[in-house]
Each structure stands twice: as C-alpha cells, then as structure tokens.
Length: 66
Image (cartoon, rainbow, N blue to C red; front, side, top):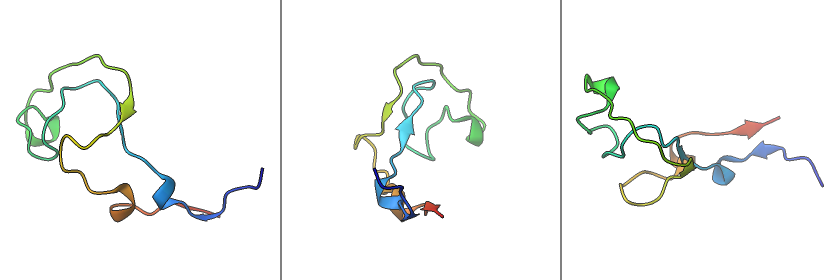
C-alpha cells in the first residue's frame, strides 16, 4: 500500500457523534453554542447524511498530509 500524501480533503467525511439530538446546523434551539440546553441522545456514531443542508467537507476545510 502506498502512503497517502497531499490534499485529502475530498476523502474526508463529517460524522455525527450521536450524543445530542439532530437539529438544523447553527440554528437549533438546543445547541449549547447558542445558549440552549443540549438534549441528550444515544445513537451510534454515523456519517452525516443529507437530512439537513450541510456543505461538502472539502468546501469547508482543507486536509493536507505532508
């Protein structure tokens, strides 16, 4: 197997930790960042789907391996 090197942003995914209820990103009324009280949830860690409009990871962050 060849080592990975360079920009791997397109191979990166966003995951849901499963510890808080799913809400619209940045606007849910139970998000601690916005003064809300988080509501606990106990789900399996999973890849974020398309239920809410979330930009592709490579459009938000850049991951480079040197």
